[in-house]
Length: 335
Image (spheres, rainbow, N blue to C red):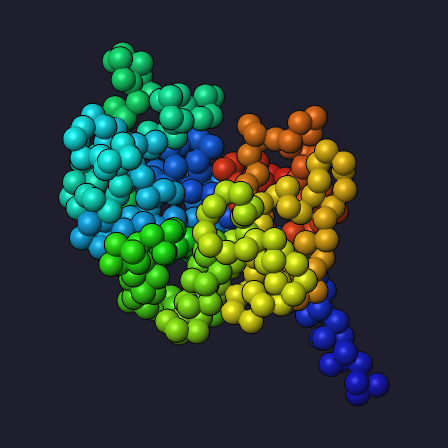
């Protein structure tokens, strides 16, 4: 009899872990509805029930981390109209070539392709009363600290604990330009008391060498996630085929708490079969937070419900990146 109570407590703790609600990660904020990574997109994602809001970080010329998905500017801002001669020899405009003051004169618009066409045509649309209509809105580039302060103030007022999900973008590229994005990011997290295992913060990176450096050389205490790409994307020098292997996952587990794979790396939608990646990652003790669920960019012949059922009912992922926080929140609430 005296052992029944402790055993019951342990069983309850186990069940709590087993059935913990997966986390909702707002991919670049509520980017399905408002231009990505803007403060407005962060506020909307917060109001829709996000557990974490993502911030991709690159550096300005004066070494201020700004929230942008790319080191380039022309696909999401009107930089070509404001600074037409400030491109490099490859024709591209780099955030690192502009001071923060200059970056914040730009307007942010929906992502466009190399033809200037909106990538997701049914998302936020701006007035077409000018020949080059995009970039006429009041959306602005935000700094990392602006996003931290915004989310902290919302948490204070609404008594929530929505977290940050930070990505170190192109760290090697920044290093070749004499700038250490990882160290600068950690300095800011430490300034706010967020570089610890208990904070609601994840730091992610596609570059495995940089993930190792964050933990082993820069002494990061925050939770780390190793992003998994395809080698053909040339996202970094990392060998993603190796990292997806059982041995590679064990290497990741030495420095990180989880992985962020591309959804098709977990499930073959054409053949309707799962891969071994999620099971192997869980076996290695790693969380699995795949990217990116978009209701307007689904696998052929699949509905949103079917994709989410595969991810949460069949695969049992630990969280999911989404452009549509509200869709995922509604789905998880009805489970």
